[in-house]
Amino acid sequence: MNDALALALQRCLPKHLLTRAAGAFARRPCGWLSTAAIRAFIRHYRVDMSEAAQPDPAAYATFNDFFTRALRDGARPLAQAARLCPVDGAISQCGAIADGQILQAKGQHYTAAELLGGDAALAARFAHGSFATLYLSPRDYHRIHLPCAATLREMIFVPGALYSVNPATARALPGLFARNERAVCVFDTAEGAMALVLVGATIVGSIRTVWAGTLNARRDGQMHKWRYDGDDALSFPQGAEIGSFALGSTVIALFERPAPFPADWLPARSVRMGEAMCETVATTPDTEPDFSRTSTPS
Image (cartoon, rainbow, N blue to C red):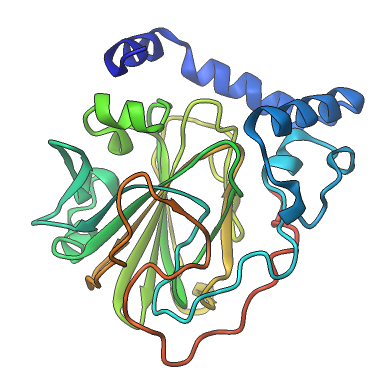
């Protein structure tokens, strides 16, 4: 099936309805049915359960528990680098942000302002920075970690569509990541501002953060903003878990201060959480976090 036909089929689907239905099943403990579905999913997508803190499919009460599974200790050692890859997945695109323009696919760009919910002042901070768009497939580890030590300053939930974010849709649909619903998490770091944009997609039942729980539970069509100033500011070490997806999706990392990506960071390359995502070395790497802990429930 070519990209245009796949997109045309997506336009016809009731994407929000399908996502709500899938989310309802994924959240509900269904006993043997949940276990059978999890086992079938593992076989179909060839999920490596040897990396999981709990490798037994029958130990997961719900599909969501399985999707957001923790890793065993030592499964993702942290590189000694100033910035680390925040997720397991594949590179969609990465590179420089040129006058606020971000590359989506060959011949297609969208603006940082569009991605960040129309906040022109925030987008201006990244106008000449760098970005990495990372696609999480259904088989991947679905938790999201910090590339560097950071302090949370703002979060914006932007309502939108729920198109698939797979590579075929990224090639076919202009402005895909600025169309879909997303959570924009804005941090201060030692090298300026950083934003991690968690992009929703078809069948992705929820976007969660460790400080606010599930963000898209209501899907009321409204933009929501939260500020974290003064006593409300939240600081995290490099590699700390900050959220998760139920099923696969995409994370877009924006950095105010550009830094060269590794030479082998090219589109379609597989990446793992904790590997170096820039060529500069951290002078004092943070203590490695515990990946086996449970995500904060919604």
